[in-house]
Image (cartoon, rainbow, N blue to C red):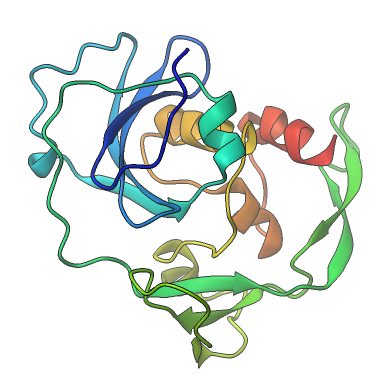
Length: 200
């Protein structure tokens, strides 16, 4: 498998789980724009990416790029002039969480994000560190509008992000188990493999 180097606007085909692929595009390093298009074969020749709805925009590690099964399809990149500016920054304090209590899948582990997080404003096109502006200091756990329409600032890794993308395919929409976990939402049983990955 060829080494994947960062190249702005490079279109990628990423394997989520074996046999399920999704298209993404390198935006500003380390951010990927992921599209809501999944296939069981890497047959993308008919795709006009500009017409495909976006799924999410998120930062990824070099480890994600090196360990994932990724190819470079011959697909014309989309033009993005309106990139996300607001993000959810999880609280840095850790907490113990127990999922699926009282079932055979019950699991207890420690994760970051105690008390949820804040909504911040950050320009991902700017290089270097810039102090983000705080829009909502403490997002209410019942504020579904804010939670559902903004991505976490977390930099995603292999195999956590691959499994998240597979779950987006499975549910037919953008889902983020980590965000659901941080904001105390009920976790469906389909999240089991994701939870196994982040708690191992």
